[in-house]
Image (cartoon, rainbow, N blue to C red; front, side, top):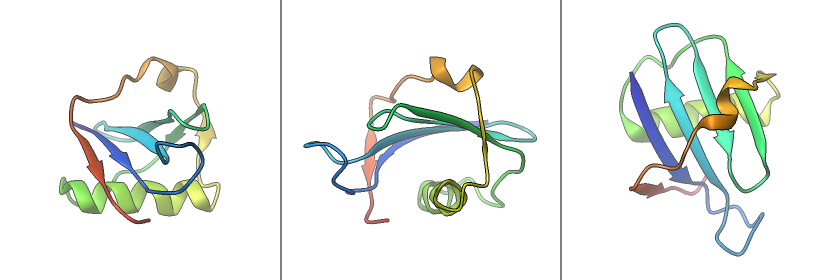
Length: 86
């Protein structure tokens, strides 16, 4: 199980768009801290690489391929925030 926090550099706030994703065995929980959206994707990326996970989550998030998740509300930001242009 992998948990990452990343910044897409999209200008939703002065700090950009910060998202935390938690990859579980059969799904991914995510929390967009900037837009206050919490979701669950019912599949997982093929790699544990941070770059792959961030792009994989955002591709599904952007296409609305997720469902809202109350479980993801409790996701906290990691100490390290990876920065990407997505």
